[in-house]
Image 1: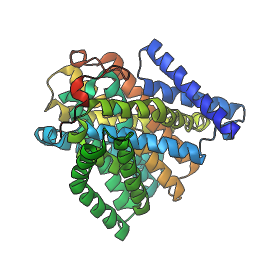
Image 2 (image 1 turned 120 degrees about the vertical axis):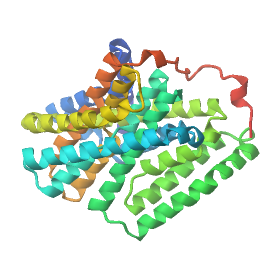
Image 3 (image 1 turned 180 degrees about the horizontal axis):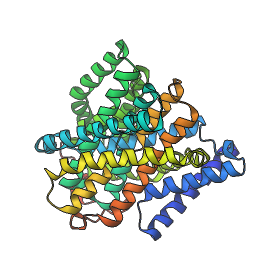
Length: 400
């Protein structure tokens, strides 16, 4: 047991180091955690200590999985359905273009240039079609864009983009079964009844018991996560939908939302991003650098050429257009999930997996660095709300 505590302490030291370096270098904390994780993974590989990192230990998988679920839920909670009605055309067009452009582009690169077979090429196209909700939301939160009209549009488009990835993976490689329909039915029923149930629990028990809102939300997220896994889907998908369903309820209590963010950003997501970086096989990328570069640029260039013309129809400011485009060019959560699905089901080899995941991780880091350093829409910047800041009285009054 001592070894688990020691390893956990090591990973959180890496998280602290990442935060300090991110502050010094003026880049996103999430990106620095990925970079530091990759450096740790390479050092462990070099000194033959990779197994000691426990990257595939059950406790690590649980914490990082819950981190991805919580971060996705919080992103969904930013999108009040009433506010999104006016943006339905924008998020639908940009989200669909954001999926189809790299899916087609990367599949063609993998098939005609790299020479992979059709099945591997399609899996590659799906994995590289994603937009990283985890990275985008973490960046939005860090700069305060999550509360702006601009930020809500980006997050909505991310959801449509990743929904396209999930559907494509299911249609091409995992045909729908009765489990899928049970999962879809349960999600629809939950979407109808979850908010009134949550409002009742808050009104009846919120200020009389210890943290029942957090316990209730986490219970629902994990329950739907189990159902998603059982049906062959991924637990982050219902997390986003649950967040959107509860958006109106969550916005009534800003203090509660900030406490959930503190739990998520301070405890769970550092492990998620550090592990994502550590899982990159740098030796595999060094062994086939040309293929890695082709996949990375295939994703980013197809995203840019597809997205920028579409975004121009909805944005006038040049910085906003490029920032929007570059953030939509990132990838992480569903990209690694898709690649892992291909590896687990013997669709792709270990080497192909490493190349695809390497390109996915690179797309999470490089476009975001360029966006934040050269195209940050400073006119939209809002001061983020500090976790330890005393909330306004209106944040703790029950408005139900």
